[in-house]
Length: 249
Image (cartoon, rainbow, N blue to C red; front, top):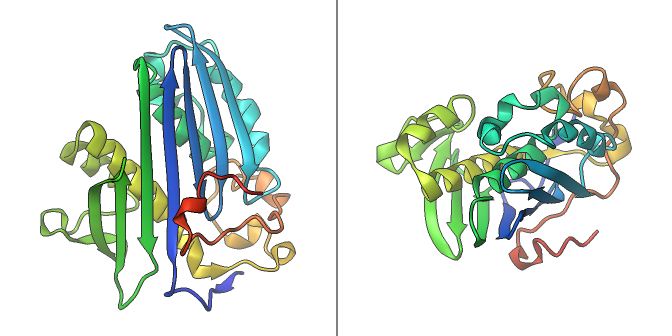
């Protein structure tokens, strides 16, 4: 069982996501404290022709194994994959790579496109967490959260940040604001890992986290029984946001 992180309350979880589209290719890059992934999606205008994830840095030894399940998307019509989460079962996939694939699919119709998201989730202080997302240097959402519920702004007070988030966000936002809200929520979820100290990594295999079965590939039985933490896989970008997407191993 992981111990509480003695430094929690003094830091900031940061995530940066970059989307670039050119001709018949969409690329998504993502980096945060726990992950550093690249993804290239290629298509012929109608169907996916290639889907190539790169697991630069990942928390568990088993994470890259999930790549083989993405093969089911190659050859599929782009339009049908808009409902991506039904295409590959959650327990067979890396949820972060699937989110990246969804972002790529959302913009494959663009001729030339570039977008950069920056997420910052401050450690909880006095019972509250401040979370914000910026798109291309312009603020989109800034929320105060307590007990996984938004408390500010008042118009969103009581909205959940965990289960049920997608439903209310879809009703409340559209286009870029909805995409930014999802990006912020994903960052908020991963930011909870800052609460715990998982060092030394050899003493904290995935099974010791007691996560619900099936939330992702590495947390699914029987994979979780052999998923070991990768030594030195964590980073702290509290004071160095510009280091994100440099992909330094």
